[in-house]
Length: 312
Image 1 (cartoon, one colour):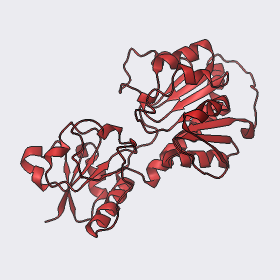
Image 2 (cartoon, helix red, strand yellow; image 1 turned 90 degrees about the vertical axis):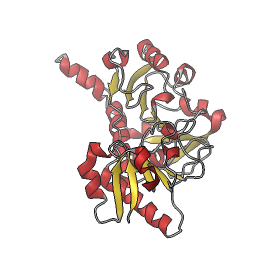
Image 3 (cartoon, helix red, strand yellow; image 1 turned 135 degrees about the vertical axis):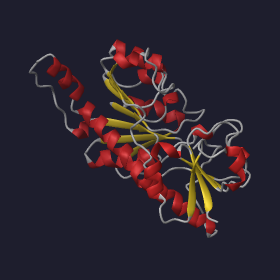
Image 4 (cartoon, one colour; image 1 turned 90 degrees about the horizontal axis):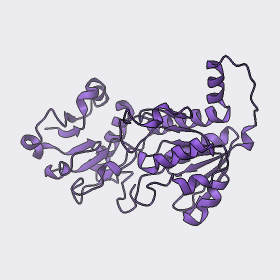
């Protein structure tokens, strides 16, 4: 009998997932359509996003857990991950490329004053705005992991002055590396466009707050495509309303979907996307899963593995 992969939630993209795993000797099942209690012992692998607390622990023969997203914050908490079962992060080229596209688009949009031009178009106002070269625009990326590193490299290729901040020092060609809490103020002070691509951990939660926003230069921009928990929304709104921030592009929020009553929806300096900066696509994600299952069957190393002590 083939091994069984459980996907949450498979039925939403059933045709795409079925095609992605076609020809590989594994049976794909949906989290909801197949009773967890009746078939629990048959499940070998699980590909999940926000599993219910304790659900994975009820799969006695589970060998590997795959995160449907790059982060693992949806797997933290009591009873979400059974001890001893490796958790593999979703790090694959298509997901990384999608995030790079989003970051480049938003940085270029602010760099070239497109929100203001769009505002002027609605007013039928013909006004040319100042333009500066990319080498004089300082972009700062919070988080220099796989996603942040790829975005930083792409921005360097366009001529931007790029710095990155991370827990430990990273070395990327053309990127100024800052690390640790002691170097965060200097990093913020030299950042005209702040991009957050951090994993969500107790140390990074609420990092986009009043104190840190105040250290950005007057007229700076914020782009958050990390997690909603990184941003204190009231502090961001206050910085926008005061004019200290010129704009923000937000893809993630503490509460999703973003509540209808949120003032972010109506704010003239805020651009919103529905956690869509980069998506896990079945075709490329399945290759990542298949490669790891093949390695596991052969007794070889799998990964990249999540480190729950670090939170990513």
